Length: 418
Ligand code: FAD
Image: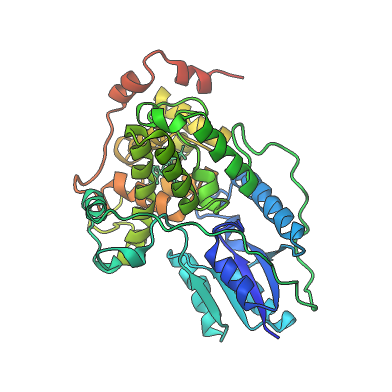
């Protein structure tokens, strides 16, 4: 009798989830769990590591996952605590043989697995959060090109394609007889989690479907730098971050779209952005912990963060209107366009001389699409401590304001009292 625990991490889906499918195939009884990590509660900067928008989006995504598991006779049990401790206790309580989960190649997540393994737990990890399969690359990840353009060109040269997504497992093994009491009893989220978006796999697939049906990829390249609205960019990010939908699934549907309507600049640019997402994942295999040093991959020291200026930036009270509008949008909605993310990050690093890590921590707390690889990677990039050949990206705020908000519409939207 083989009992397995499936530990859902940032892969809150049943479709195209090879790790979960493998667990289903190998288990007689399967216990699907999610652990709310107690480390999420605080940061050294005094705010929650997981802010309210992220919590709501996560809650909705977990409810959706739970409903899908229940529809197949299984369930999702939620716990709260230190993942390694919770899982070790669960292994004992259920007499499970092993834990299956997706692999996350970031320091804290690597450490969680290492502790489990040190305690003798059998943990099977599967890499599955990228669009492309690194096993098919023409280079080893440890030797991947540092610069994104070189990375992309090498992959384009060999015409590398995403792997085909796989279906929801045909059968999910029943729960083990000895079930521990879940420490968290979820309540179904009725509230809309976000002005634009709802968590969970069902909403992710519905959103992708309408995005393609409305032919929005065609205009993506032209609209992607806009600041206001639902359609200027794909808004896939929050679902991708929690794994409600896989990047391969999006890639496969985009591929079908191109077969049906033809490839164009817009569809190519979406591939291009999804490749950035992969790039920031893979660079972790090469540099690991180094990406988490204050100096990143360089020897440049960080300037100390001044509490007062950080508060000004964080709360949208710097006196620079475009920046303040962006920071208020972020705080009020949990989302910010890519253009505004670049502008406010640059302003914090170069104009306010702030510590990029404090900025990254605030984004982590606020963004519903917080993703450890993309957040770390983009902040390092703008701070010139990552792999950017130009050594940093200071933005000229006056020019950005003129280019992207010439009629003051965005600034008025977020700065005027409600
Ligand atoms: P689209 O423009 O429609 O792009 C499609 C998809 O491509 C996105 O969903 C995303 O998965 C990927 N993508 C696009 N741009 C990037 C990029 N620069 N880097 C990596 N992937 C990209 N993205 C996150 O998902 N999580 C984060 O925590 C995050 N933090 C960021 C921090 C900073 C300082 C900056 C400048 C960017 C950050 N990004 C992050 C990248 C990017 O801003 C968002 O992915 C994008 O704005 C999400 O909106 P969208 O889904 O409509 O993107």
